[in-house]
Image 1 (cartoon, one colour):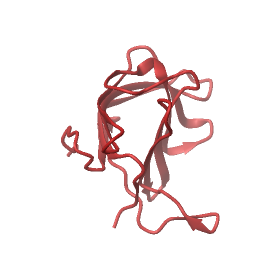
Image 2: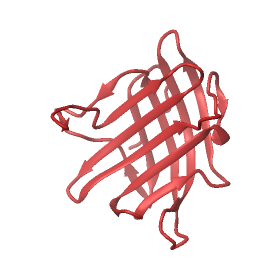
Image 3: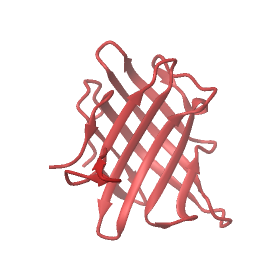
Length: 159
């Protein structure tokens, strides 16, 4: 079940892809290069309107992830639709570069911030993303009913 669309910094997110629920999951602790790293989720806000989000999922066949970052000329400082301000990357569960790796967003996508609170460090929103596979296939993927509600600066992994 998708997490509810909240705006309280509950550190939850999810979406539907290929008719299946996608929720972040990564057991603790995750070590990369000899040190701990955010596996399940990390959300950062780097002032001047720059947002960076990473949501990871470890599964039997490998890993899957979704990243959303503000474009170099993009700014997110308030609520509203910011589809033209972001870059998106998604690795499908069976992805091996460039197959199963998608980028965008493409026309028809939306990325709406429902709360941007830099005092209480909360960012919440909803999205529908259409992305193009990074090979020459012309395949597209649609991430539907997406939502997130995170404390900025938190780094999470699953228990």
